[in-house]
Image (cartoon, rainbow, N blue to C red):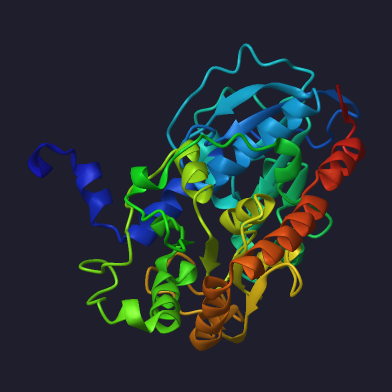
Length: 382
């Protein structure tokens, strides 16, 4: 097949992957439509753009904003986006604002094949997530495509404000406003024992295996429950008390598993927001989580079992984050996490009490007030 490629294509494939990605972004930036320097003073309703049908964190964020705007009577349609994809924008109302739920580096790539007038005459807002206390300066490219950046947490906002000063507003994902329709599922559907205390860890490997830290979560589980852990020969295979569910799940299946869970565990090294812990808390499920980064937007020591940590320089073998001077993240204390798991695993009443406190905290923090304020500040009404 390589023999059938054109000479320019063969030469292109010889370049390092980083150089190819940079070249694609530069080329996309030359042809992607840009927002007007001055947005309209008033907009009527909201169009949600992004990976609205994909099982990704930002895809889920787009669906959350769509549901919340629908509850407010502001939803005016969806604009599905993908790298190299092209969607018809002809039916989208011109008077509506556009929420591009896309992180800065992907904006030119996803807009490269968009209609030339997609952003013209519109107010454009870009809800984003970032997981480290320092953001790359390359993220400034977002200023070409959006009038305002909505950071999903104070933690993310502090990092983004450094590279896009004056453009960033904190708008946490309005999960409580969006509502939750959970399918009825049984433990048998997941191969889970009816009388077991179920501890759930969820992650997407595309979001940096090291940052999500599933090995730390497994180590904490093994330390918390040594009788069962003696049968665990490996983190993935042959463990009698661990189930590994692989693949990209639709939101309904994720919600179904959460509904059967007793404790959610997140020994992340850093989160821009942390959708799964937030969704769990809103359901009244107790959470054991690293006490640092974006998840502190909706949890504290009274509403979650926070795990101690120390800050260390970012070292990501998957190179999702590249080299960012001064970037740090948490190294969670596995022994402390194990102790928290043991306390909750042995005491159903403690789980219920912590779940109730977490639910109250998350509902108050994620009730959509900041979304309403942001919409009003941008002149977006029904």
